[in-house]
Image (tube, rainbow, N blue to C red; front, side, top):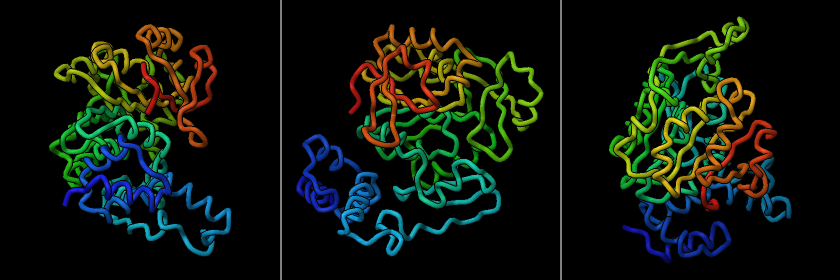
Length: 339
């Protein structure tokens, strides 16, 4: 039974304590929730509900998590060991396959169902059913799944991952969640020109995969990033030449973000409303490109920048001149104010 506008309003008022505006009503009504109960379970898992619950605890209006876990965190599904992989669930109830020995994403998702919730909120919030998103550096597919939930079966997500060890897991995750009709997996490294690149990774840190800089000669780097693969590099403009435009790009490729985005210049130019959610690490980017020239290029196309904050307001404007001094963070890049 399809949700009505009244269903959405009642769920928001009961669980989040506020009345949604018409845009939020339309958005949630169009998502594939089976009934009010499923919508309610989804809202209970949101950061907004978690924050509201924490306020109640602080005011003595709800039990402390030390005595009783909040509904958004208790009864985590059991993680299943399947030999070469483990299967768990995200906080949205989506199944996800992970590397058993990974020390980056896997422990957090198995325990909490979350990974980089501020990044997830930033990307998810800019998407609508029927939208088009690109996930560059999909890793095990956590953000890919969140964006797939946002665009739904009428939209599409293109996920790019260079690490060949993660491709079977991503294929399994896409299959088990029924996303094959609207999620396309590309086993490619996104760069500013085609050709073969060397992807290097620390053995137990599957979030550390990075393109080896051409100038890298330090033996300590190669000792630390000892797992290396030769991978085909592609340009977004070639791989996605058939797309008229994009709504969201999420990109986290350990310092190669400027190169990957430059390789999608034509697509970016024909996407006036695109929002780019990017990891921002000056040290890693400077080893691979001229970051100042990249900032000039983006601002020349009309883009502005915001820091995506894990605490407080999600989007905090940052002046272009301050970008080179930012500590390791995540940024939102857009011609328009974020939603």
